[in-house]
Amino acid sequence: MRMVINTSPLLDPLTGVGNYISHLIQYFNFLSPENNYTYYYGFFTKNLLYGNKKIYQTKRLLRRIPFLMSTLRQGKIFFSGFHYKEFDIYFEPNFIPVNIKAKKTVTTIHDFSFHLYPQWHPKDRVGFYSKHFFKNINRSNRVITDSFYIKGEALNILNLSSDVVIPIHLGIQHNIFKVYDRSLSEKIRNKMDLPENFILYVGNIEPRKNVRGLLQAYLELPDSLRKELKLVLVGFEGWNNPEVMELLNKIGDDAKYMGYIQTKDLAYIYNLANLFIYPSLYEGFGLPPLEAMASGCPVVVSNVASLPEVCGDAAYYVNPYDVESIADGIYKVVSDKELRENLVQKGLERAKLFSWEKSAREHLKVFEEVLNS
Image (cartoon, rainbow, N blue to C red; front, side, top):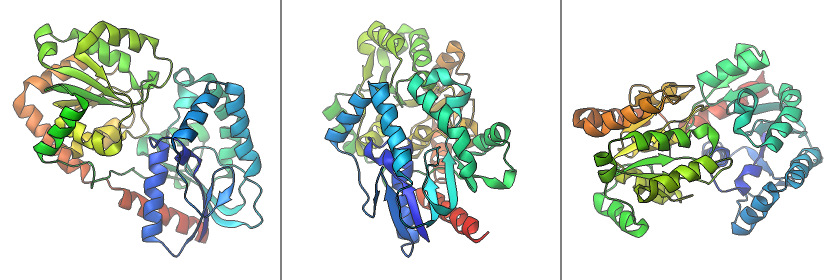
């Protein structure tokens, strides 16, 4: 197959969609090296390119000026039509298929938060998606979703037939997210000055992730428990989070916000945590809980959206809209050794069900079937 893939998100630090693209391409080339791959960044190239510090800083500056960010996005759409040959497959891994010429188009929709909960996104992003998503998605011959939950939303919102929407779960880097020798993890504890006992959250600091609810729940815990069990937050600063920062100041030394952490170090941090908490209000999939499970960490997670589908019986569920429910979940898992050990064992088994190789094989199967249909 002559395949073109929109790889623009690889120019950002690798989280979310960028990670999804990076892992799939790695396995596409391993599983089907006979395919002819081209990558689109606003220009077409055979070379797979990743961002660097200078690019990250430039894009961060552009995001502060909505007009420039909008112009950049519009430019990517405009220039996507400038290729002299038609491809067999155009794979759009990031919601909005552009003008790339191909016999068949496959698009991944990760979630519908921009449509269902626009208050969780910057206005310029919502405006761009509102303008381009609904009119462009119909170019897709197949739509991939990260979960059966999002497939259900796609069928309802887009009025597509069931055979057009294919749910494919994401994967885990099992060579990185695993149980490590304690001595290796302790080196990271010392390097990063992590507390002896802590609750861990991993994700962007933004409204959808419900970090405010987590911090409020942490404040509800008994003083004696907070004295022994600190809170560690890992992830990009995100946006629209002044209340979160105020609560962090209120909690003081009992909480540690670390910002973005490299993947390898993050795996050790999962190993060190007493408990992983993910009180998100909405997820199309939700990788961090599985990463924590694969690392031998007990997981407390929201009972909403796709998270029960992903975590199965290997997590303790809480109501993310109820601060007391989050606090109770933390307290129960931390104080019940048998429950904690049971979650660890179930989590290790659950995580084995998800791999990027399996996900890539299923993607390639969709491409082959749609091309031959």
